[in-house]
Structures are given as structure tokens and as C-alpha cells.
Length: 277
Ligand SMILES: [Zn+2]
Image 1 (cartoon, rainbow, N blue to C red):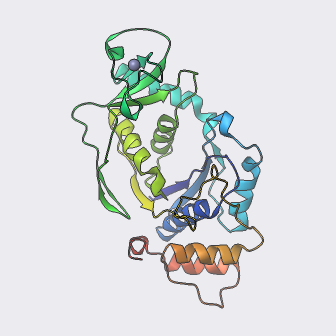
Image 2 (image 1 turned 180 degrees about the vertical axis):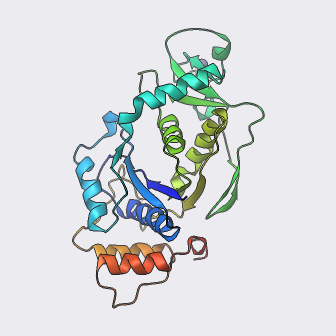
Image 3 (image 1 turned 180 degrees about the horizontal axis):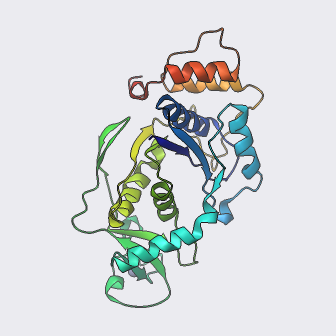
């Protein structure tokens, strides 16, 4: 049974790029008669914009992107995250790193003897086994291997906050998602999250990475770079633009409501058409 999700961080209102990711993951789930959930990845409070806990779900609803079951909050799953960290510890896959930012090597990896020492305070890191050969076949992009991959990376930060990679890797398998459709900006994260799944002895979901929406200068749209919020007063026009970006068949002009557009788009959804623009 297909189970998909959209998992934005609550760092600001949805911009066009995040609407595209939400729509694509929604349509792929609906086309495959699956379920679709929304999870706010809210484990990094300093980066949060409180109002987006409200504006993101509201914006999705305005666009007819209704999720199944309750809205999920990643921050409520800390016990699960800790549980999996203890599993990694028992499996001998993590170590405590006391390096400072200046002593870490390229890609932010620990390259000192931290794995051999048994000291207390520091960040907790996963080390990849030599047998790990990261790579997978992306549902949109085809075969993928990482250009660079660190030998170890953070699972839990020195300040006690769970790292995004661990939380997301754990939540995605623990919630049983089968398909993850998201922006290509997360491709590097996917290799790391799959390494965490492997270390836990779990199968990863299938992944599909969407082309990135860029501004007129070719820069990725991002909340950090102040991308404009989606104009919620014109949801039908926004959906049409997003479908066009996703290289999908345009709904007929007779499709005037959000529901009409989504029904047509679900019926005509072609994930493999994305890369043939
Ligand atoms: Zn270290």
C-alpha cells in the first residue's frame, strides 16, 4: 500500500517551490490510491517561524491538498528518535565526537580518533561502514550516486538537539512511508538518510526528486532567501502553474475549481514525465 508524505520545516510560509513539492507528492499518492500525510519537521526551534505552524496547513487546504489522518509534528517524536539512537549505539554504529568546528575535516566529518575514545560530551555521529555503497535508482532522475559522501555525520548535536537527518530518516521508516517525492535540493540528504536506514537494518522508501524551482537568476527558491509566499487568493492559477512546471497535461479551461483541477491532474498524473521537459 502506497504511503506518501509532504514534510516542510516551519520556517516561513509556503513558496511556489514548496507548493510544487506538496502537489507532486499529493498527486503521486492519490494516483497510486495511496495515503498522503503532512508532517511539520519542527526539530530546530531557533529556525522556526511560529506563524508557519498555521500558515502552511492553511495554504495546503486552500489548494485542496487535504492530508489523511492528523497533521504530524516531528518534535513530538523525540522518544522515537532517542530509541533509534540507542539502537544505533547497540549496533556499534555511532560514536561521540568532541571535535570543534575548526578541527573537523572536509564535509564536516570527524577525522580524529573520536571513534576509539569513550568520552562524554560532544555530538553523536553515525559512521558509515566500509561496505556501504551509497546509490539508488530515483523514480524521477534514474540511477544516482553521491558526488561526495562524508564518512560520518551528526545524529544528535552537541546542544542535545536531534539532527534533521536522523529525525527524518527515522520518522520516514517508523511511519512506514513507501514513496518520498521531494525537491532535488534534498538529494544529498537522501544518501545520508538511506545510510541511516541501512545502519538500522531497515529498507528505505522509494525516492523521487523533483526539478528545482528557481528564480529568474537561477537561484533556488528558499524561505531563507526570502522567496515570496504563495498568493492564497488564486489557488487554481497556482495549481495550474505548478502542474505546468511539473510538465503535466494542462487541465482544460472548464476546470475552474481547485477540486476540478486536482481531479484532472490526479487522473493524468505521470511521474516519469517530469524529466522530459
Ligand atoms: Zn571528532
